[in-house]
Length: 224
Image (tube, rainbow, N blue to C red; front, side, top):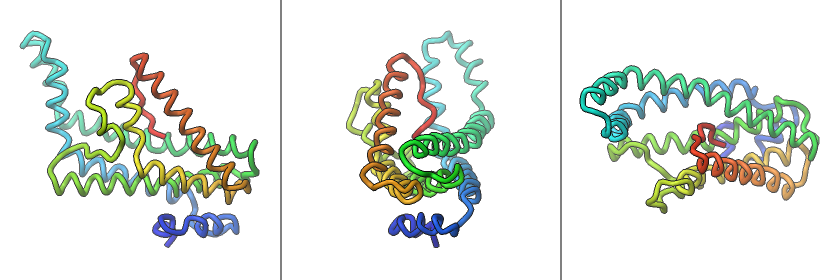
């Protein structure tokens, strides 16, 4: 099954697409969105108390009456729905944005046939990222601790710009990007070195841009 084969033999998965075989990328696209929603719903149970604690800390400087009024707005149902809407909107946006960007790039530095081919690579690479979310969920349930992290932010105590940028760097991201580079090497018909250079180069540009946004007080809501 290609969804499992992507972890150990990605070249074969992408060569099947080159021969006009393999699963329709839109099916994988929809599956990623659905599984992401399920993961969010399952993890919310553990995350809610932590979220309320964080909100309460942010409001602690308000007069008590205003603080209580503000806290009443952050009901469990509202937080659940707002997070759910975010997942439903942002996961497809991320996948489509990546597909479009890489289609444009590899139409210049390669020979990508279509947006569908670009999306095919992107969705399969994002299966790796989805696996990390599933693993985090398992650890959350096993330990009872919310927001499990595998990224480099664990080495930074000060939650400043560098901390927030490093929260986007982990082994699953590297693996996902590597699979993406292999995929574009096959489907855009470019050598492996160029494909890795382009994919990781764009990712580094994204991290730099993210750092600038954080430094200016913005929020990076779209993970690469």
